[in-house]
Length: 490
Image (tube, rainbow, N blue to C red):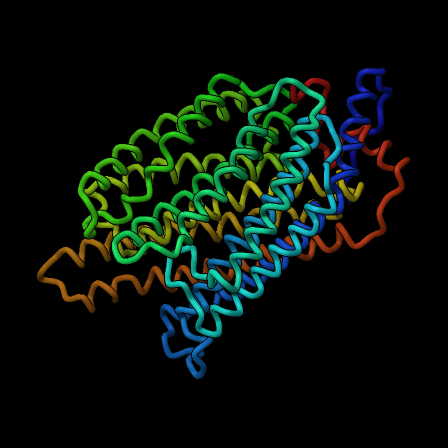
């Protein structure tokens, strides 16, 4: 059993600050636990379908008796379950917990948020069942049928957004921490890009352009925005020191907002769209160096002298590695946008590796770390096992490292083979097989890590809800041996 420090006497100001956090946590407890529980279910669903799809790449005759078992449907359900199920619902839970704390007020319309989460889940179930049945919009990251799934997602996400916006308007603070900027902006950006991506009037080349406008911005203005907001919250919070530079954090935010929206067209290099669109996208990708460096420098200098905290804080361990992955995937994305590099890496396993650095090594790691911090403060119990946390961390770290390295290497070999007129296309496929086998081995390691996490999560939340007096006691002391000193967030 993980133990915490003994409670210490608190001054009047500290007690008032504790009471603010207590009221915020009590108000968001139900919706956050619902969002996290739903995310866990979709993590398991996405993991199973991802494993099947991975093995099919080097065992193409496995499970082909029925149409719904084919690779195209397995892989698509995996993607949608992980993006809109696991990642998005985990981010909803983190948002509903962070915002009330940072604005020093209780969550408004908690029941509305809870209804929104249920509706979002209904949309996911209908959308993914539709994919298995053969109903697919045929657009990257927008495969779920627009009439089966989209109305539920729009209404459900809108209800959560309304609850957060009303909470923000009722805030009891004047200054807004940078995490609030990122999280609330994501709930404004996502409906816009989702509407553009699903607009039925686009066909042909226009459809390809709007599709990649959506798909790339779903990563940058939805998944990235909330994950960066979480990183900006938890790194200073766990360390007990303010973020290095508020000005740098705002530079990172505004430059992300200005430049990222133009990035998506570099996925269509060589395609039948106007050259100026491609060039603008490549230039915007290069300018992403500004928000990436601003964020990386801010996180790194905040951590300077305190990297030893990674040994004892699972939150810090996951979130810091996630922040490092954000820097890595962004720099890699700038490189891939260049025509000279893109002609080698496009249509290869390199792209798959690159996307997993972003969605898994960055977003999923930050979500794991966030849940390790938030859950003890909602259920008022320590995580039962430090060893299970270690197993979870090392399994998913080793799994994603093997996954990315293997596919990156064979992706480059594949791209060079396709460019060589002396090499047959069959040979360009054959060179990927060792990497695809390694990918499946990595998938098994990730699956083991997920099962460890899910089991630990179940052990954590299965008890009864604590009484208010217990909440007060626990909030007055560090939980999971992570400090909460006075003035950590201001």
